[in-house]
Amino acid sequence: MTGGRCGGAGGAIDRPECWGSVAPGTPDAYSGADVAGYRATELRDSRSFLKSTQVIQAVVAFRDPPAAQAQLAALLSGWRRCGGLTVTLTPPNGEALPFAVGAPADAPNGITTLDLAPRGLQIRSARAVAAKANVIVDVLVSCSGTTDGDQPRVAGVGIASYVLGKLPG
Image (tube, rainbow, N blue to C red; front, side):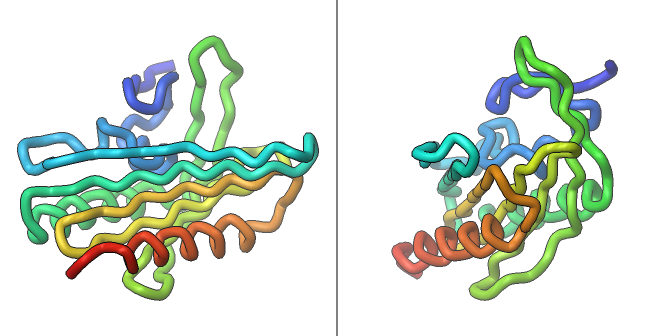
């Protein structure tokens, strides 16, 4: 495979330009002198073996609002380029997994969403990203045991809206 490697996301991808579409908040997607701070967390609810939820949320602070808007525009440009494609991820020591990447869609509060669906698995994921002031909020919600993309999309928009509401500006 002629794929790229991403230190923040781990593993390899057959379309390196699509890392920013499938992996939330990777430090590789937010590099440069304009980044003032970065924080990401992962939460899992795996009480049920057949139905679990995973949330990865990141916030990236930039030196000023124009820098955040420029980074958001670059990220969304990548989402538009990769929307409609199948992207294959190969985790470290893992089996290759093709993902169908949806088209970006507008949501309330200036949030943009992107659906992701691994082929052949009952897992649906959604990205939600937005900027406010000098901060980008980047969220991924994955739900297993379902083929319905609404649940992770609605949750991602809700989380992003909540975080945006906590930011001044």
